[in-house]
Image 1 (cartoon, rainbow, N blue to C red):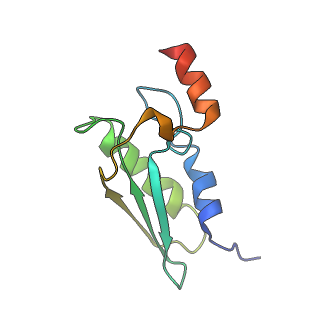
Image 2 (image 1 turned 180 degrees about the vertical axis):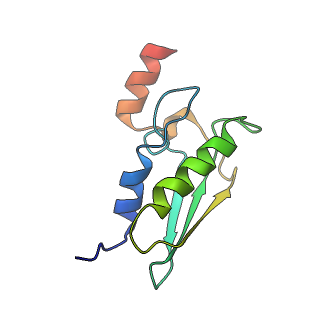
Amino acid sequence: MTTTINEELIRGMLTDVVDPEIQIDIINLGMVYGVDISEDQKHVKVTMTLTAMGCPAYDMLRDDIIEKVTSLPGIETCEVELTFDPPWDKEMMSEEAKLVFKYLF
């Protein structure tokens, strides 16, 4: 059985990538701006931002994203593109993340 690679599947995998400082996943934090999948479904590009410029956790987050995405059958490469346009804002978080964030901070 082959797995259909789509944005929903990739975003689901990325809920396992947790920001180490905030302890909330990057999807619920609203850090993932886009998921592009090549036509042959072998290459994925994840466009994301950070909660703050110069975030020291970027390398760890990038490596974790690549590891999760390339663990899917058929995915050969994953590229992570970093952008600050638009800059991350707390309003980008899911309602669930906002609730957790409120109690943590």
